[in-house]
Image (cartoon, rainbow, N blue to C red):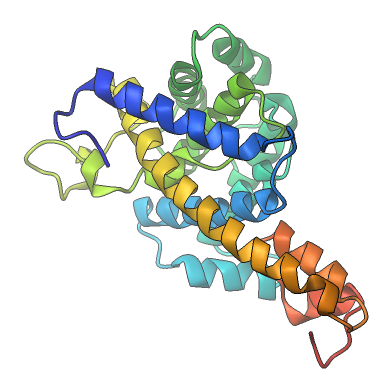
Length: 274
């Protein structure tokens, strides 16, 4: 939770401690990511997309976004569906601004001339991961030269990329957007108004980023604990499965948020299922 004192120093300590614990979990005892790491990223991508859809006053919730992605194929999708695809996309790419930025910009319909090298320089010169995330997201918003929700989404994306770079993660984890719709981040007497929430163009954006990552890490860690338990149960029964392709389906289940019957069939599982 956000510290009751609203002290930026306490928030930075809390967020830093949470990131350290999450980093240890993501690396694993032997230096390898846990088997559910990909599923964790995609679950958080779904949460991030739902949060951004809420900020943009779009109707889709997490269930609708999941169905749109997994049941409708890779064709045209809704504005909220595009947000989901952006977060899924960069969560599956290396933690590099140049490899993820152009594709995210294209999906969001923003100015394709955004300079990834300029953003990378902003990120690499920051003294710590949280500062890097705050600075690069604010810089991305300025480069878009607009206050549109899609530009804010890009700011959240590059913040997570900068954070992952500083922490030397193989791939970024959707985090910042997960918490941006949280009521505790609103400020002032008009807390119910959209204008009261933090934006990358605000002067106190670095403080908001610190609080937001603190909130997001708590949620991400709780989700990781739940996925670890579920993965352990799944792997325990794996040797007992006899259906053709069952083990390949287990690999798919550990790698994504959801698996459709069609995807299981492509993996070689017969129609009767597990």
